Length: 240
Image (cartoon, rainbow, N blue to C red; front, side, top):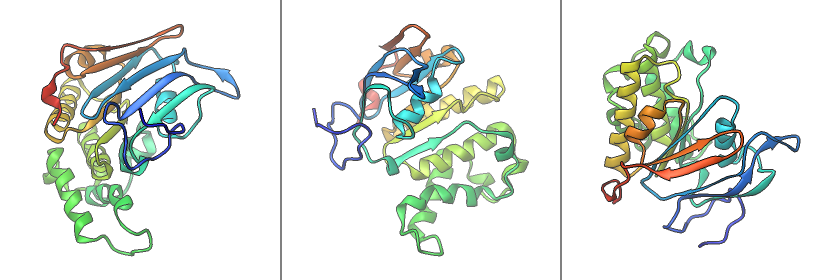
């Protein structure tokens, strides 16, 4: 296995894993809020992180993204963090954001150009169009984000994350406020992207039923322990 420091960006990563978490304990001000967590996923895997409120699911996402350090253990991320798409939990202010969907998705391409360029390049615009197409939202590209339904807004935010991603997307409770049909549609869309693009997906969700149906691996976090396992959906067909 390639030796790295925790959360170090590396250009060449060990093909066995794209993300490896080794006996980490997470917390704030030195006080643990999670059990000991260990797992490893490869490129093209679809991991669903489930568990009750307060067990540290979103805290784990922060640690993977390098926003906090574990109290114990190590995280090995064998991919540049600026090539990971991220869809955080949505708040009420974000729902009323006064911008077009195209403007929002284009911001996901910031890591693909020099920061000082005042305009988006042809490559960035093409990447945004590709992301709209992959999320079945090209028809609402020029619409105002704040006027969309909850399901449409999440597809636009997924497109933004996809525009930023090279081979991994991390999503934190993206279906929390969606109705049942919109939730199914969103998971179907994720699975399609996972298979067609060999995109590694890590999603936090309370929905254990959909996790079992769509994910290749499940990490269930509880107060006292965590359980990581492959599902019946694990298959070489999600690999390239």
